[in-house]
Amino acid sequence: MPLYEYYCRSCKTKFEQLRPMSRSAEPATCPAGHGKAERLVSLVAAPVREGGLDMLGASSGGGCSSCAGGSCATCRP
Image 1 (cartoon, one colour):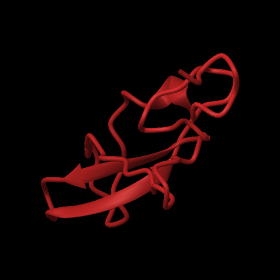
Image 2 (cartoon, helix red, strand yellow):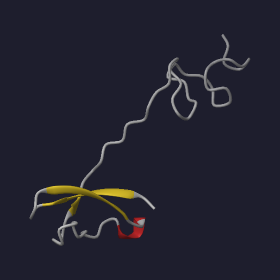
Image 3 (cartoon, one colour):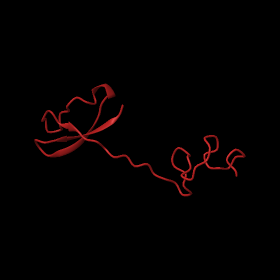
């Protein structure tokens, strides 16, 4: 179940709530009990490992989908 971030205009607070995707567009109730809190657009940052390989193993320098880094015979010049 995804974690969504909401903002309550009544008490000016941000809070997070686990909700099914099917209910993601519905207004949420803040912890103080105010209804109609609005969902915020959250930024996601993915950590990058040393050497340019991201969490999925894709290389920032290119490569084919089988080796993801130019180390197979198909990717070598």
